[in-house]
Image (cartoon, rainbow, N blue to C red; front, top):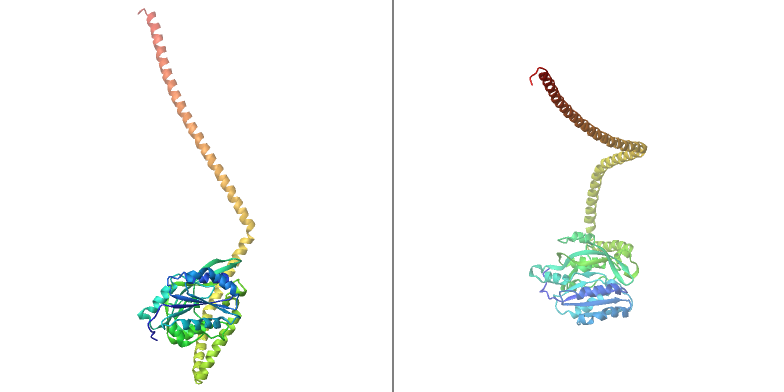
Amino acid sequence: MSAPPAGSRVAVVTRTRNRNLLLGRAVASVLGQTHADWHLYIVNDGGDAEAVEATVAPHREAFAGRLTVIHNPVSLGMEAASNRALVMAQAQTHATGDFLVVHDDDDAWHPDFLKETVGFLQREENRRYAAVLTRMTRVYERLEPDRVVELYREPWHDWQPHLDGLQLLSRNLFCPIAFVIRMSVVRQIGFYNDTLPVIGDWDYNLRVFAVGDIGTIDQPLAYYHLRPEATGSYGNSVEAGRALHARYNVLYRNALLRTHLNADPGAGGSIMTLLHVIADYREMVRQRLDAIETPLLARLQEIAEGQAVLSGTVAAEGPVMAALHELAQTQAANAARLDALVSLTERLAEGQRRQEQAQARLAQRLDEVQGRLGKLGFRAWWKRRWRRLGGR
């Protein structure tokens, strides 16, 4: 496709029903956009009208005429509610270059979501894109009586930098909160399928893709909120209605297949041949996995048995290990005592050595004294002898 020159007005559709605690957050998400050329259509699908009006009333001045509230007396369903807003949006947006986005009442945007998506679709090099998709972030939360408590966040796992149509045919890859569509494409493909109680967004995404490629912006600008434990009106349709989604997933694909076969009855042969080839390939892959899995499981079994034997041995030898531990402690105590004894012996030896040195010095001193005394005795004898000889 080649889109006409793009304007800047964005029709934002929000469907709600008795979830005013969440609706207030959605309203703040839209009002917080840095791109201000938008109009919000809130469709109250059979919920409390007064509660919805009370939720938006504090923001009337900030909306500055950019808000339309539609009250359905009874619930028509998500897609029928979207169509009511779409009819009004198409009547009010005179330019063919405007855009459409569904902002569910429990989700949110980064402030630059509209700025980045509108800017992408306005650029000349992106005229071939029918719509644009941004990254999403999953936000897990818990509801309390008067507030929403965030638990944790994680990236959206199905992100593709270049959206693959074959993948989109197999499953829905994204949510409306991250998806901006050219209004010219909306006029071409028509309204949402209001016969689908669920997966209507997947049907619409495929119809958009049938017109042209879907561009991507690799920035997490959309927040998809999940409340796995919530029930009733505050539960997510995907989480609270898994059985309904599974049922209509099959019914929807069956309907598409019948439409294709009715339009081209001969296509059945090609489809059957293709499915047979896929089945053969799956069988080949299964056999190869079995060939790898069998020895791997055997080895894991050996490891598990070895661990069991080791655990049993340790358990059985508990008393032995305790005795060895006690012996080790005794040896450590004896070693400490031996070290003390060696130290004491060394000190005694040092004392004995010093005593011997002192005795040696004393003996030497006595020898010296004796020598002197000896000399003194000889002199005394000589003097006596000399006097006797008359040599006075």
